[in-house]
Amino acid sequence: MSFSITAQLNKLKKTIPDQVKLVAVSKTKPVEDILEAYKAGQRHFGENKAQEMETKHEQLPTDIVWHFIGHLQTNKVKYIAAYISLIEAVDSLKLLKEINKQAAKNERIIPCLLQFHIAEEDTKFGLDQDEAAALLESEAFKKMKNIQIVGVMGMATFTEDMDQVRREFKHLKTIFDWLKSKYFVVDDSFREISMGMSSDYQVAIEEGATIVRIGSLIFGERNYPTTH
Image 1 (cartoon, rainbow, N blue to C red):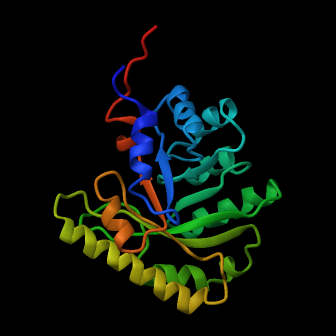
Image 2: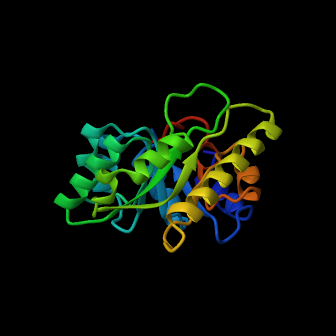
Image 3: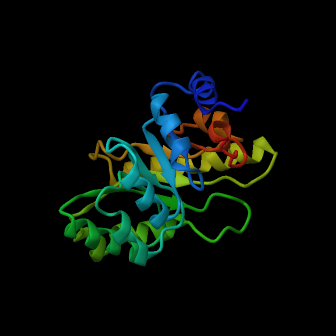
């Protein structure tokens, strides 16, 4: 097989500064592919389906750092609460309450990112600044002891217009700075800005990303059949 996950990963890592975390987006990819990336030194992996992540988690090394990167339904939180390292897409108080509840059951504090709607296209998920303020100022949020908001996440418009993408990433950085100064000024753990994917991660890094989520540049555009 000419495509090598290890070679792709090594090439990619040369383009990402040390202080930026690379999350390998392994959704839909088989355990064998994840294991190849793991053996090449990759530790952070991103999934967007709770039960698929659960299955993979059971089969893979225990030191993998799992990121949940998609829209998370409240009834699926229980499947990942015991081991998840970061839930990247919290877009409602309702979801946060459920994460807090399931984290408490597992005697953990689960780190989360608030997802913001920064794209100029109508995607369904993500807070605006007013909604984020209402969430953070709510009594319900103030009582939560088992979650920790550690930053923000956003997805740019799916477009080849990098000027537009850059504007959207700048907007997310502005939101991060506003939240930091207003709500998290003394909280050192509030530091993550997750933005940028295979097509635009370099622009994201230039605009302040601390986490980039990359799938196709590592694993290829499709599942390559394994040869026996």
